[in-house]
Image 1 (spheres, rainbow, N blue to C red):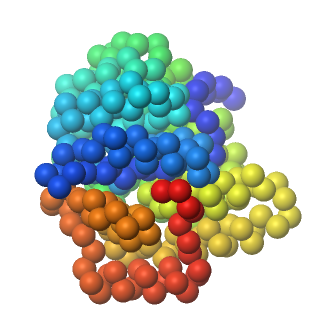
Image 2 (cartoon, helix red, strand yellow):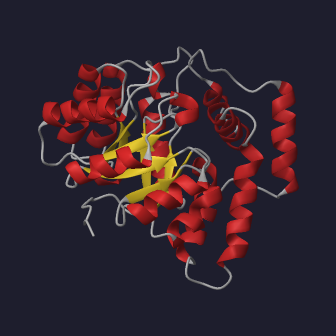
Length: 307
């Protein structure tokens, strides 16, 4: 069995939202405070500049500046999984080189997602060029499998072959497909590969299948409960905790996770700056707000104090 070496912790990761100012620029201080709060409320690590973080709405320089600020202010880089995948090969290399130079725990890499119908050979060549372009033994790539958003899936055979080609570099994956069979197959056919579910619904299933954990938009809010599931993963009563966690996740499904998470943070903290979202994304409609609040009330959801 291949030993995929990585410094990132297993367990619970929040796909962090990105707080913005009214002019839609990144609020670095608020971002730092939110990341600290996430780590203090159940999350073992933070997925930074992923889908929920509105990464593809920001320029390369904005993304690099935000990461620089976090690390300059004392954030542990080994707890950061940084999104670096772009459509253009040079952009992916530039972001990845920068992240690796900051000694982050790993990079989360989308496929080049504009062109569809890509072959496994084409994707393999792309990642080969990224790895050669970064040319750093510290590089640890986590593939970002999100076919609903990208339209470019990572097949099991592609993942297996790429991991076999670069076992010291391609060490894991975030699977946001929502397809449990795909996650289970990856865990079974690539033992030791660090697979994280993209939803709390499959957190316990992934752990039992020898996967690494969960990376989710909603663990911005459910991190404490997810941490309980992880802490009690070998206990007899863990299924009850997982049921509660799944119910919390399901309450957020149906609308944008970015706007839903930011709405709850704004409402629960009485800080309306959380409602700043860079276009083309936008806030929830009144109907969506009412539906979300009704669901959260029905399960007795409460945001941990201190945010």
